Length: 426
Image 1 (cartoon, one colour):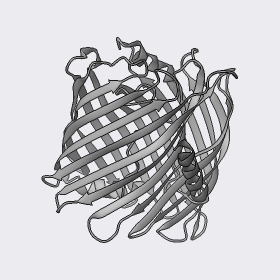
Image 2 (tube, rainbow, N blue to C red):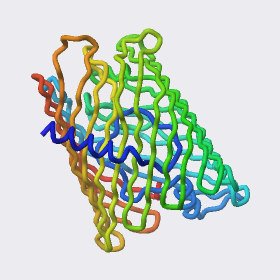
Image 3 (cartoon, rainbow, N blue to C red):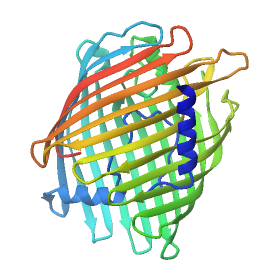
Image 4 (cartoon, rainbow, N blue to C red):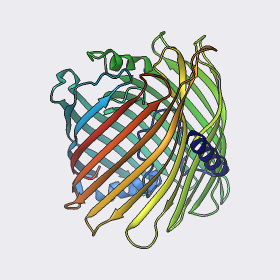
């Protein structure tokens, strides 16, 4: 099974690496929760137009979209790698806030969002946390120049590593600038830069395994540039280079690294068929005398989406990412996955979605002679969304991930079943 998965990943990524994505944004390495991409990808410009159109409240020249949500009401059950089971618990997140949009003519839009949230746990009171998303943005779509600038703080609860499949609060402070200049009718030059600081808020966690997530706190600086060929609205092909620098906050398990990588991107968004790919030939080396083990592999994501006539749509997706390890003997792991998802509309207001994916987590040791480690990963889940009004929706969702290790005591699992009530459509 592992051989089949690895061959499938290699074929898909190599075939699609000649193609790829629909925006010039900087991207880097992190754990992505299971589930795959959305069935209907859209550009930032399209998403912004949709959001502004739905913001019907006016405060002078400013459009305002209020938001309120009672989400991630879930029963959480985890089994960690030492066989010990953290207490099964019930969690919920409640939030209320707004997004605001100010347009300077037809070409410039300023955005702001203030979306505070409170995370509640029934038994584990130490995990209760005030989170939220606070962002400012500038979007300029001029005759030959596109300029997007975003900055702010996002603090949300999520699973940050497959090694400890427990949701924790994570604070990310980031700034990003994207620019694209039309050189000719079909050729565009693009550049992007981002700075991100990630902090896992687990200092008060009583479980030492969860508390170790602070070892993943780091700062990432990414710059990217290149040329894009866009012969039509549906096609986009880009080639460029990316420079990355990562500095870890703590000396223990320091995996600070840097490198320059060629990148390729392609997207095709047809009426019924679409695909997206991004690939980077990573060449990373230790930085500041860290213990990072040199990394020379292709990473990326690929997805093919199909929307036949009717209310059924689906996608086949694959990914290969580097994820930093918490184990003292291993520098990182290669997270490889292949998955399939399907969405089915059941009437005008009812939407269901299912996914199933298989993969492997292959570890790279700091030193020769360390026992080999590889985990087989299976994840599956489903959701059901009921749109009650244009701004009010109710969702039910469930997720199960199973990790089967080839080392004794390495098996673990994660199960979440819950619901979300959302007002405002964000």
